[in-house]
Length: 231
Image (cartoon, rainbow, N blue to C red; front, side, top):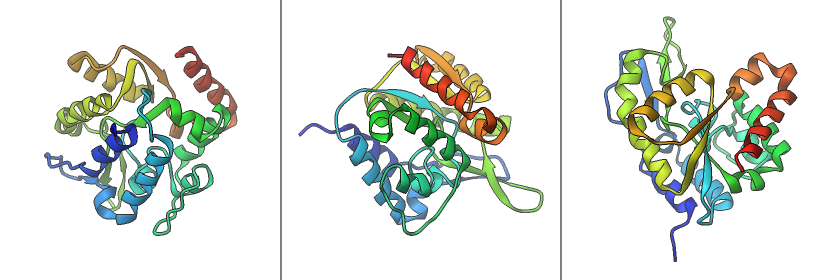
């Protein structure tokens, strides 16, 4: 029996490990090591929506958040949306993540989770959560591009990860990159490694939900129009 898209993603996630250097004050969180249930619900999700050999288009995020994929193992999916939109319950954690709110409102407008995931695969160039320590000693979400030395440290790992994503069966003649600042770095990586064809840049769900929530319908329509143009 041929290996399914789900099998490839599960193998990739299950083997994720970052052993490279990091600047002082940054740490990497690996949900697949931190919580055994994460592996279980991640497997359920991919078997449910990716149990085929269909090629998909790539939506490229930044890196997982602590309360989204940093818990569930599913990009842009907190435990609330994992249950309400995907029908998969996570008992050991309960999270709310604002990017997930926008993403699943958009997915609902697109036609629902089954229709959306039949066509798209979402992941990030750095597929594990990054946190940084504040002056007060708290750990908060960080982006791979927040510090030049952080980007330099993780760049090769990101290129390798992106190549692995592509090898799963992705149509990368056109990819969708979430976040304008993210896109600048993705374009830099693409110039070096020749990973993608065209790049369509969309506002990041967190930015929309946090700063443009009154215009959410406009951005949902913008996403769907961009996806329709890529058919």
